[in-house]
Image 1 (tube, rainbow, N blue to C red):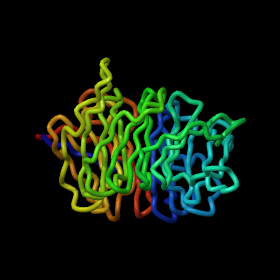
Image 2: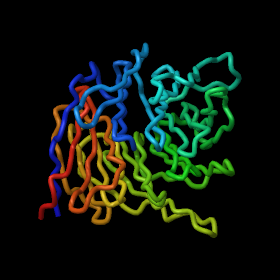
Image 3: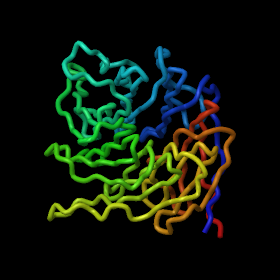
Length: 323
């Protein structure tokens, strides 16, 4: 089976530098973060900017959106983390994680907003995941430190959809999963040979897809059982990219995944068949991809958005099924 995706829309005002992170929200808007220091909200019908923050003095490297699509957490290259309330277009939280006057301060890199609310997570260069308050009156106050036990740079972190676990990836190819209720390390995987840049949970929280500089994506079974025994770990390897895999995401139905690569291509994968079912050639490196979170209508494979080297936000939709 093959699938075709068409370029349904391009944004009207591209970023002046690479897009490093992107998210299609439950409010059907798109949020993009760029190396030009800006973060913008886009209308998915017109491709126009609907909201934007003044440029940060350095690149925005990571973002995370609340389940209702009304709040955006983002982090700059210097470790400044902000919480943007989209309903009021205001910054309701700001934390300088690099402030060495605070004991144990660690500059954040990747960030993730807990879908249950109340906290957010930030990776660091020490191999820790720091859990901070996301409440406006105490934003950035560190509550817990989760240690991987290895002093490796944390590339990305991502909460499970139920907010009970968090996954951490490192520049050494390791992936760790922590239980947020107990603070314990549930499991770790050494499936990759190089840095893992992106993590994607299935919507039921049973699978974790990882994207790496080793040109591979690996699907992990991370189910938690009643006995406490972890899932079986790596269950599939997806190959076909010829350079670093920079980003990945899983569709709401859990049937498909999408990936963006430094090889200037986007691939869509059938997770059950463990194979690529669509390849899109782009003009530059594809740094970030995100599925539309609403379930696709019958007969459609859904839609996703991409961002990368050319600074353009692009919307892609399924053109139907092919054989």
